Amino acid sequence: MLPKEIANELRNQGFNPVTPPELKAKPTIITTKLDNHIYQDSIEEIAPEIIDNNEGNI
Image (cartoon, rainbow, N blue to C red):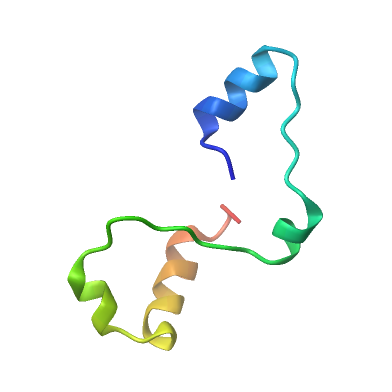
């Protein structure tokens, strides 16, 4: 859930960021400042695009 830069800096300082199992089990997408055209599409319409563009990153 942390940006990579922050997670890396924590590791450099001797900390080991751990994602809680609840978050790993329930993938969550957090977005900010979405363009208005995003709201026009249903979840069923945008889900395949999100999955296709993020395979291997989950």
